[in-house]
Image 1 (cartoon, rainbow, N blue to C red):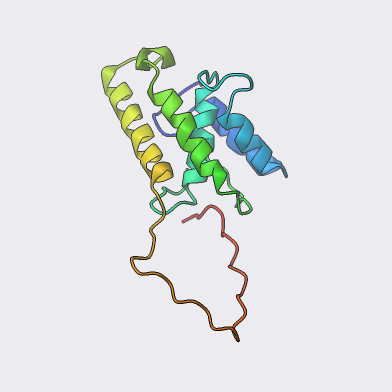
Image 2 (image 1 turned 180 degrees about the vertical axis):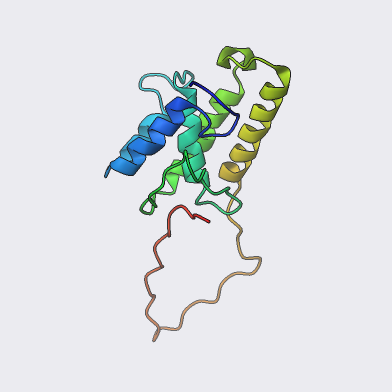
Length: 157
């Protein structure tokens, strides 16, 4: 079928990638591979898979959209390393800086919608986490630090 929309999972390659994520136990490896091209930081061949991987990572960020209920991954992913967020944002910059006609869109309206979606996705990934405005109090010597709760991974609605 090819491509049926401008969303991150609205094409065969991205939908197949989501299925691969569901069937795999090596999520981090698959995401890193999709976000980087070996030997070249300026060339991404499978942009559809790169966008899908970025959407997976963004779905667990504040302001991130839930994954597509049919074509996106169906199984929740384990907590992912935080550096994947920066890698995904950088990969989207590589895609956004290429001429849109290199991606095969057939109308200006689709190009505009697609670029808008990528810019929104990049905004979620590039946003810096909120920091407290006042310094946190130091713990008393009698208090032991408790381990932080693990990141819950992608959220689904």
